[in-house]
Image (cartoon, rainbow, N blue to C red; front, side, top):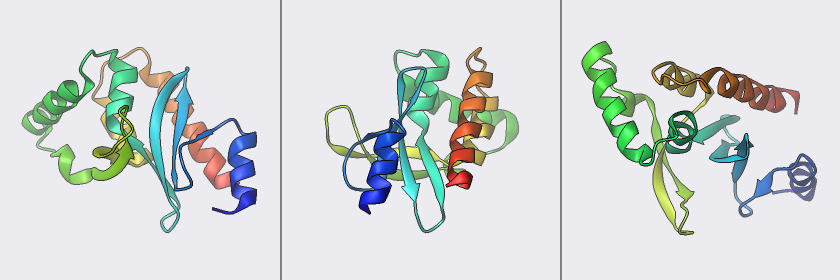
Length: 135
């Protein structure tokens, strides 16, 4: 990472996890782990983090698992096939495989979650995408 990139991240208030393309973004003071794919020039966001924010679930992994089953049954869409897994830093500090989605896929997932926070989260996501385009 170039020093100018590091400064840009620092000055925009982002907390840098390490010198890779991973960082933590904040939505209403809640952490959303993310990964920047420089080759494709897109952000990937942790689905578990988003589910936790939108549902206030005690076990967002379980909610996500049940949601994948429900969506497959109702819509015939297998969410696992349109998401990817990347190693992101877990709360214990270890790098663990985590389901992630780009902005487009994440918006589709959010539509399946009944939450009053869905609309504000979509607006936040649009701002994040606009920053990428602007930079």
